[in-house]
Amino acid sequence: NAGVMQNPRHLVRRRGQEARLRCSPMKGHSHVYWYRQLPEEGLKFMVYLQKENIIDESGMPKERFSAEFPKEGPSILRIQQVVRGDSAAYFCASSPSGQGPQYFGPGTRLLVL
Amino acid sequence: KQEVTQIPAALSVPEGENLVLNCSFTDSAIYNLQWFRQDPGKGLTSLLLIQSSQREQTSGRLNASLDKSSGRSTLYIAASQPGDSATYLCAADNTNAGKSTFGDGTTLTVKP
Image (cartoon, rainbow over all chains, first blue to last red; front, side, top):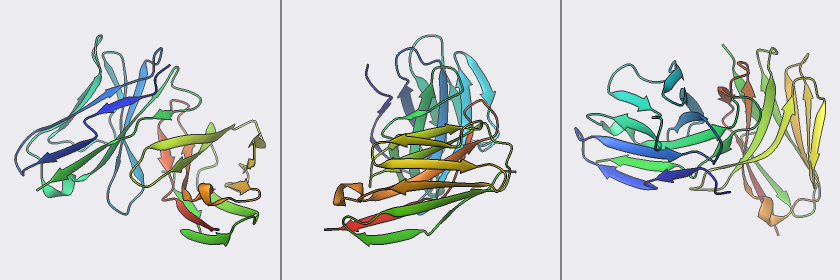
């Protein structure tokens, strides 16, 4: 059973471009969480999704950020018009039921030039 | 709003020493608390999860305890090894839906 997959592992964008981060949960997991880890800071919750539904997006900035988890395919975290302050590591986690342990992917490290 | 604090921020010990990492949380109405390990530039590896009804969990040389009334959890590492060097994070779930609040971590260095 493969773990949580994230791609790309590293992403470089110039200010104003769009960034798309992908997360494939573990097989059988229908709950996905996105976290952001800014340099020298801890992980902060961004959004919680189940298949085709956003359950909780209280940690996600209101502008430029969006997330989806379609019926088929990976979960996508999309950042429009990136700014330097978006540079961070973005982690995805999945769980089978929304309770119990979360399993994390290796993260996508976004660098905005 | 839940706040999770980990003290110390960094710890350096000689190989073979037993050590304790501390995690405190302000809202004791948690469903579970999870300990993770993060290696530099890598993702998080789940070490132990303690449900709110449990007092401790053990895995190999690791033992995690939970005291909800005092808002504390500890991670005990026995007979530390250089390979244990990493950042250790604790995360508290108040939602029973996996939305966790993380501490900033304790960076452990075990010297050979």
